Length: 310
Image (cartoon, rainbow, N blue to C red; front, side, top):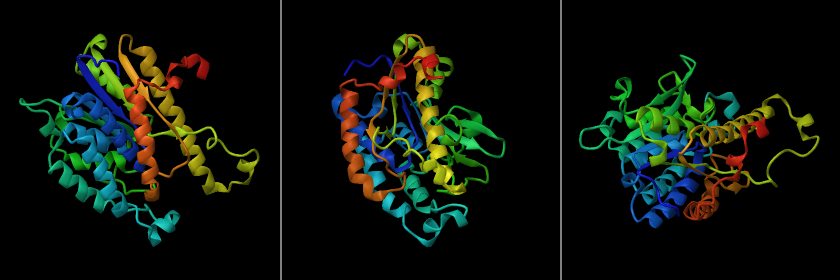
């Protein structure tokens, strides 16, 4: 793996339970580095499941601890019930009670402001969508309005995936509902213009939660003709999120001259964000993704010029 620069930032995509793949990859990276990422990074940014990982690193949890968190919590959250089976008739599929309890225990009830003290200043950016004000919010420990916010609340706000989990405080939903399912640009902007890090002294590592392998991507010819109204939801969401995630990475690569930007992504089959039975497979993909990171096998799609994509 190439040497890291003076300042290191980490950006983590959304993707539900696929986050366990990322934590496993980060275990491989921590082994290669010989230390926890919380001792290497000074800035993490996360959306949805990425906010869980970003906050965990900010709290100096090891990647192995975060993998275990996912393994412990997934069966408690994603239970098959009447509500989850007939979800179109409810406001959400899964209560967030178990998730809140696990996050409270992991964060020890700390607030965002507890990350930004004289003893240790760690910048954590959590992305959420404010439906009340119709804007994306970036929750940070050094912003006065968020200092008293519990870290648990910030994570729940970012991870409140529409139809899966309830809205938080009557206004906050998944940060990926906007343009920042991949928070790489937010991390790059925070590093350059808020923390005033020089690009030549900065490494930004961006980690995706998997993109569809060619054999799983797309729909059979003629299949869209047979979709009824509600069946359009997931194909549209997948298309919007995939394009937005790729574009965020390309913008960072092309606009932040001198920045050591490393985007890592792996092709996987179709795996639902709430499929607990897929955890063993996700851990295997995570091992592969971790080796890609250690071997500097970055996502080739990032190198495509924007004008060739549009």
